[in-house]
Length: 101
Image (cartoon, rainbow, N blue to C red; front, side, top):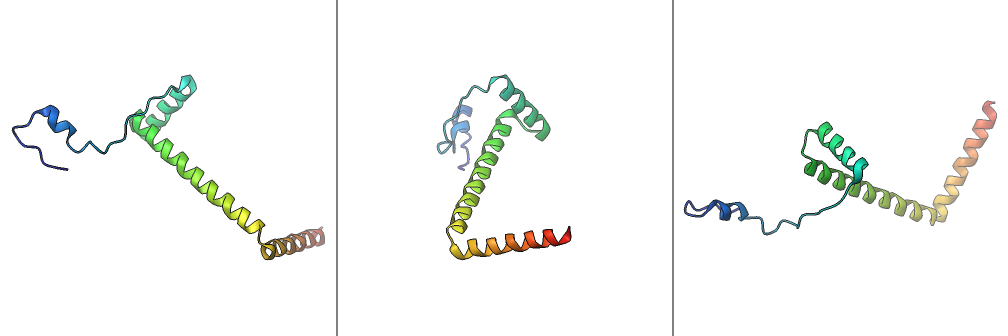
């Protein structure tokens, strides 16, 4: 970020370095969403805007992980060797369970 010249106005000083900022987002949360946001902000000790940013980032990360897990499950289900080994393990577990009763 560039240093502010003493002869520049305060208005000019506030916008230096903000050219890369994404545009603001506006949304209607409804009563339940507003209450949830207020509770989250209070619990975390942050502003509602920061709580919303955190929640969005956390939700996106959870979705990325779920997508990755789903892709891994599809890959394993398509692997005949893995499927055969999994079936053997299930059969063995059923035998062990039957023997213990």
